[in-house]
Length: 285
Image (tube, rainbow, N blue to C red):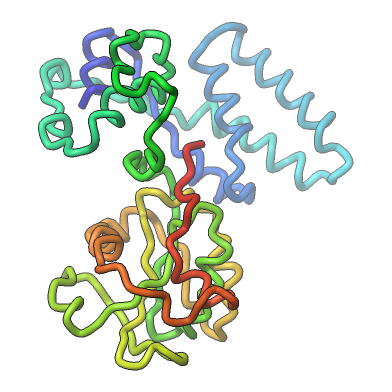
């Protein structure tokens, strides 16, 4: 809502482009830099767009010439698509007065709202000395990344419960502790969201427990490491578009609010180590 206000009240030209979709169709995977560069030159008008396209295509030959004509053609197609696929958004007048509902419901700690948010907007220099009253020794609140739910991934993993062999390798390989195993009792599951699924836990010390792989959709960066490392014969993790997983957002909140239990397996194995609380979580990049 804040962004909508800013765009409308400053008469900003707002354009969008489905760079990820274009890159996928061309064969560039998730690489969108050429598409975005040509779109920028079309909109910014710093030099005639025809010249920009000519220079970009010359740069493609310099950078990728040794990789063959197919790679050159893909990048040239990306440049052309970037220029022609821009969609102008007509900004409605209602954006000028739209209310920011998130501020009224914001239950995050004051430090996050008043200091971390400001710093993350690259506006730290605007903070007065008084903002740091009580933390003059430089002590900062740890774990603030947990409050920055940004939903930046295009595709995120979907857990295929029937295929899972409960090895926990997905959690082990996740760079940001976005995907984790959780153990629940029958009592715990009475309060589970309707979208929550689990299966009988297997392994010594896990008798009578239920097992689930939890995924923090809004913190995932979409790297796909978890789906790649899964050793199950039929993959237990499949990358799906973010929008298809939104109904499962409450599952993460349920998982992290489960009663703290002692790790039944210890930390000497990959599987056991992943039942521990991760001390580095979520990407701030």
